Image 1 (spheres, rainbow, N blue to C red):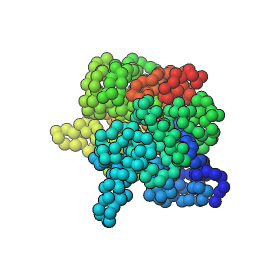
Image 2 (cartoon, rainbow, N blue to C red):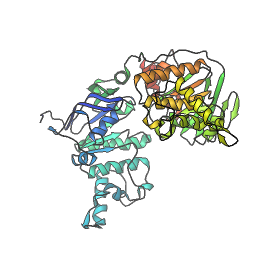
Image 3 (cartoon, rainbow, N blue to C red):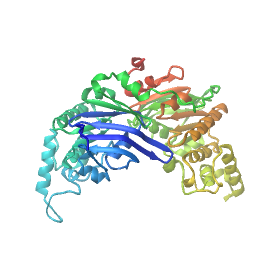
Image 4 (cartoon, helix red, strand yellow):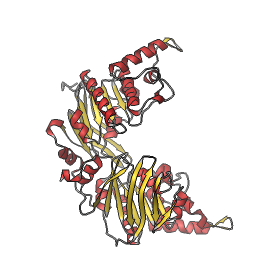
Length: 503
């Protein structure tokens, strides 16, 4: 037991996944009635730390104290019993049930087993909602509520569980300015009631309005904790991104040629707005931005997987219509997806079949599959990309992450692709495999291919890109050349401020 005065202490927390050290000796303390902001880039370890606190993950080592007592959080249910509530970006609500039913789902008051006490259910739910000063009727269906009010239902649900520690993950990501103002009033009300809040946000302007202390994580490591009053915006950004570029990024500049892709005023259902840019032969165009900025949606749109509302796409100066991935493949576009396991590969198929599947017409003649040719092509790319596999017939599920990524690349190389879209190309793979992917990108551009690279890793974006577009809220917030781009400038653009402010 400790006498620290903290409601929560997390010391020396370590968590490792296969091939990835997600948290390394991380610290977090929380005082009753404070808003403690948890800051860090995408992949810094914030969500992993919160999943440990909320019981979704178990820590590998370290200590957690609640009210000064050493505690092992066994499960999400145990975390709730301890007074820990979490509100994720994606709400966990049933839209077809009432607000009250959602608040007490699985814990409804009953007259006796099997018979719900409806009057008490609605009365208790309404009491919690009224305590939050929100205009919500406990009897109305959740589907009738806007995003901001649904979030308040999540808060009410947490309070119904007697939450004393409330984790809010990007709570303003989908809110208007007026809704954010309402949320902040609720947060201040919770503070006055003594609720301790861990607040995760990329919007630094919010931190100065509601935050008391800030803890920064970077690459799974604890960087420091300071009172908000002792930090400037630039100092926060410096804590988040101040590190040298990885020496394992061996960028080789290729000769930049003519325009191969042109996007003019592209709009997609109000989610992508007025997107315009050009991509040239031999170029790596980096696309940076925070989670939810629209980067992956842009990639899928260019791959024919989203319906374009307006605008146009030109390949080699000719306007094209991309209504399906097959249309994109036919004009020479290949997408290395962010989630290779569920979108890039069929894990129960062999390496050979994953390589040949998008190109199956190349191996069929007269309705008959040419196995000899299919085997030869698979062996060719296994050799070219140094795919470590016992044989071409090995199911891809048994390959390492880096080798799975090479299989994804192989199918596009086999497709005569000239425009490669890499969405988080090195996520979840080891340093050696990363270097091999970068070297492959160098070979592609040297041979005249054009690459769009989406990445949340700033060293990767800065190290491999010839130009960088920064996205924010479905728009292009700015463009930087490789010579002028810095981590601070990219972060400022992503957060919504002119990058000169951080210089």
